[in-house]
Length: 250
Image 1 (cartoon, helix red, strand yellow):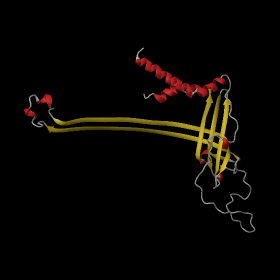
Image 2: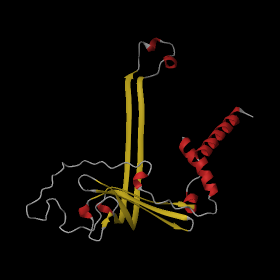
Image 3: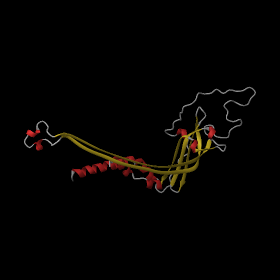
Image 4: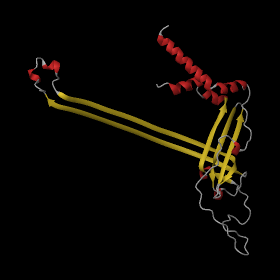
């Protein structure tokens, strides 16, 4: 066996071992769930999830509440009667996700350049006195020619739309009164789970009287819509192909 084939076998074995190691735990879990529906995740407190961090944003200077004599109104209050909209940690509000994105971009760039340098020197250091000078020295000294050109084209044509509703929970109240909300929804149809995650910061004033808010009014919005299950698994490339896509330079 040639050294080339040995090197190829070693490389293939290394890639296979790497792919097996990367997908080991995941593959074992998937094998144990063959023939079963994907399980829904349990309802947990979002603040106890791994990686959760309280949101910190620039805050204005705190204002001291002042009360007027013989008055039930307090300066800084948003309403005279109790507001039924979400305002405290643990309250629930409905987020109307209405996301429509459309973009069409086309770019083309062309560039060309031609350079020619010719010194015009034909008799360099007495080259005429040398027998057969053309074999020793060139006819012209310091002569250079270069040509460069490039042509690049690119286009983007994207259209996305997502319309749905999801209930979110207030996880944090910032010092200025803004609310940090997070909502997660999972729907299982046969062997496929569709999940929607919405998170961000909202102003209490933007919450409608029916305790709903449009997703366009969420600051630092994070919206994720995807799924997992048999259909999603078939649409994904295999682990070995993903490893090769990362490692191969061509």
